[in-house]
Figure 1 (spheres, helix red, strand yellow):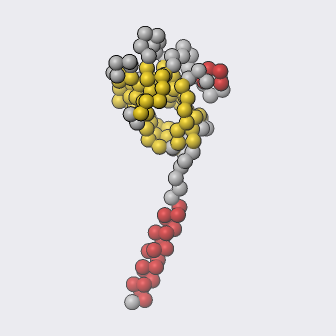
Figure 2 (tube, one colour):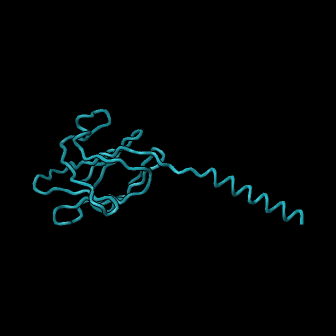
Length: 131
């Protein structure tokens, strides 16, 4: 009886300890989107998890972390840590680029599905090129 009670208390204590150790990563990232493909005739629209976010601008040069004037020409928004389905569509709704992006603990990963993409990250800044 004492042993069963001891094991139960130990199990409850361990579960409580491990549950309190789980921390949600709610870091906010500044994410900048651009396309390196000249789209003067075809504008690309950005969708994140199937929700329209805005137009993706064409930039002849890749934005960098240190070049604020070029970086701010890109379409920007904030995202928290998580997994996102990022899609670029033309005016007819045809998908030109699609990928799954995971952002967590200052690390990023991308898995391309359609088209091309380039993703770089530094601190809380992420630059995403779609083409």
